[in-house]
Length: 514
Image (cartoon, rainbow, N blue to C red; front, side, top):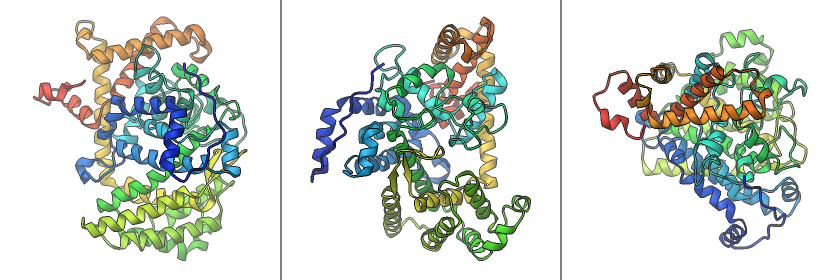
C-alpha cells in the first residue's frame, strides 16, 4: 500500500487562489492521481443513476442523484478545507498538527463517499443489510460506508490485482467516517456516551454505522496508521471536513429537490413550526409517550427532535440554540422560500440559487477546529447555531417527505425487487447444472470474497470465530451476491428483476453491462 506522504504544515497565503491551488497540487500530485482514479471509476459514473432520496423518473431531471450530490459535497468540502489550511491562526495550526487539511484529499473523499450506496438509496441499504444477515448468516450485514471502503480497496481494481484503486493512506483514511468495524458496537467499553454510529440499533447487532467489514480490516488499520495523532475512534481532519460537507449538502440540496418537486406543503410545515413556537412550554412538559403516540400532530415532531438532540448531544445542544434555529428556519425557509411555490421560471431559479448560496456560505464559514473534541464530535465541527440549523433542516425533510405514505408504498416495491434479485442469484449459484452461465462479474465477486475470507481465517481467525470450509464458502457466496446487487443502478436492478422473473422480452437491452 502507498503510505501517506509527508505533510507540509505551512500553507502560504497568496492573492491568487488558483495559483496557490496549482502550486500546492504540484507538490502533492499523488492526491490528484487519487482524485482522478476515483472520478474515472465506473463506480463513480454509476452514481448518476442511483437515487438520492426521490427518483428522477418521478420528479424530473432537476432532482439530485448520488453523483450530483457527491460533486456538490466535494465543492462544499473544498471551500472548508481551503479556509482551514490557509488559516494562520489556531484553526490552521491544530489541523496541521493532526495531519493536515488538504483540499484535494477532501475532494477525493467526497467524490468517493457514496460509492457504496446500493440501488434505491437508504431503502436498498436496509434491505441488503437484512438479507445479508437472514439469508447468508453475514453477521456484519451490509453497510454503505463499509461497501465504499471495500470498493476503493478491493473491488474496483485499477492497475494490479488485489490493490483496489491503490489510493494513498490519506484518501483511504478520509473516507472512514465511522473508523471501526461492526463488532465494535458491542465490544466498546467507553461508557454510556458513544461516537455517532457506534451505538447498536438493537442488542447483538453491532454498530449501526461502520466503515469496514472484517474482510477489509487490514486496509482500515493500514490507512489509520498514517495518522498517529488521531485517536482510535476519531475521524481524520480531512474526513471530518468531508462529513460536515455531506451534512450541509444533504440538508440543503434535498430541500432544493423537494421544493422544486412541490413535495413540501407550506401550510403543513408552517403549522408544525408555529405550533411548537406557541406551545413550547406545554410541549416540553408533555409525557414522551404522548408525543410519540401523536407525533404527526403539529409541534410534536419538533419537540421530539429537541429532546433527542438534548439527550444525545449535550456537548453542543441547548434549548436556547434550538429555539433560535427553529425561528431562523421558520423565517427564512418556511415563511420565506416555501411561501412562493416554485413555478420553473428564471426568476424562481435565481431566487432559489441565491437562497442556497447564502445558506451554504454561512454554514461553510461556521466551522471550528478542535484539538480534543467530544467523543460524538470530530476535530472539525460546526458551531452551535449552524449545527442546530442542519438538524432542523434535516427534520423538515424527514417529517414532511420521507414519512409520506405514497413514498413508503413505492419503496416497499423497490425492496421486493432487491429481495427477488438476491433470492434468484442464490438459487442460480446453487444450481450445479447452470451455475457456469451466471454473470461473469458475479462469479468473480464470489471468488474474490472467498479468497478474502480464506485470508482472514488464516491470518486473523479471531475476527470470524470458528468456521469450517463449508461455512466460509457460504459466507463468500453471500458477500459476493451482496457486492454484485449493490453495484447495480436503480434501472439495472429493475430491468434485471424483470428479466430474471420472465417478465421482460427486452433481452439484450436489459442485460447490458450485467
